[in-house]
Image (cartoon, rainbow, N blue to C red; front, side, top):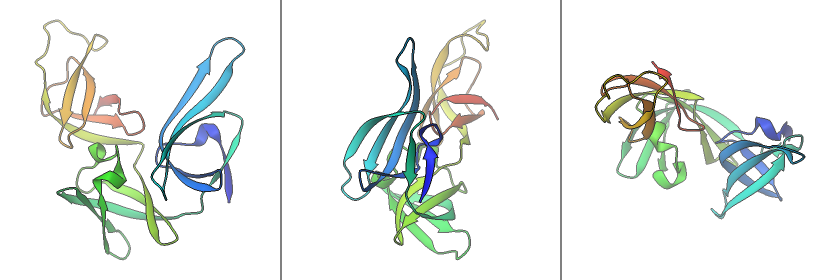
Length: 188
């Protein structure tokens, strides 16, 4: 088993905590002023039972990474509530439910390369790339005189994700979105 610093844990990672395997759903670095010190706030889901848990871990603590077999896969399409992936080596297809992908479906567009983690030959998590390029399909009209540093407006992307974007972004524009936080990075 490999140990990693708490600050290196990202959404999609699998860790062993309290003798169980957990998938990290959200990971926040929190620094409280004064004598409080910094810590990582992790939202995790038990891969066996499906229970969720929030845990505060000191930044200097090390966590056990679960032994997983990562496989490079490509997202192909979704059919109802199922999402179909293809193994890039064996070309076998794998179907995962939208519930399993919880919160990650908004970043999936056809031909996106992802890493699917397997534990005992069972898929237990999907790790997305750090950022994806999505096309804005619907947003409010521009405000006259709005600048790049001004206010933000909601924009719906082709994958169904709603992202806050600067006023100058219009429909049809490709934007780069951080898959950990869901925040707008830049125009692509």
